[in-house]
Length: 116
Image (cartoon, rainbow, N blue to C red):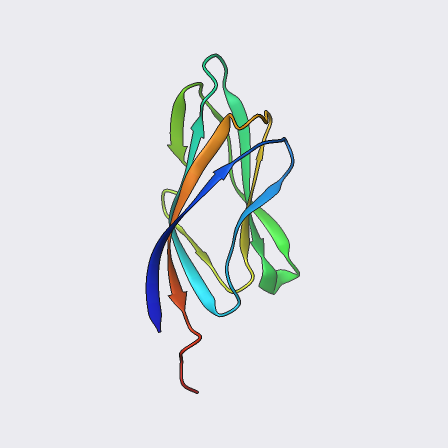
């Protein structure tokens, strides 16, 4: 078993619900934080984030919904999130044009080298 500490950046180019991080089949992810930045100089932007649970028929569970103030940032997961194999995080913003962007910090625990 190995642990790799990683970052994954994202930018919302459109207003669609986009998958920004998916846990590999041979790993578990411990997400430390999901930072969300609003680069718009004049207005707040509504942002939604969902966890897709692949073990529950790929059911989506909203874990963050908030208006992110202009020129500000929030941590959408201050308590962290655990992702099992196949789980993912999706993000949607009410405004596209890369005004909402951020970084996901996580530890990837690789189980591909396990015995038994």
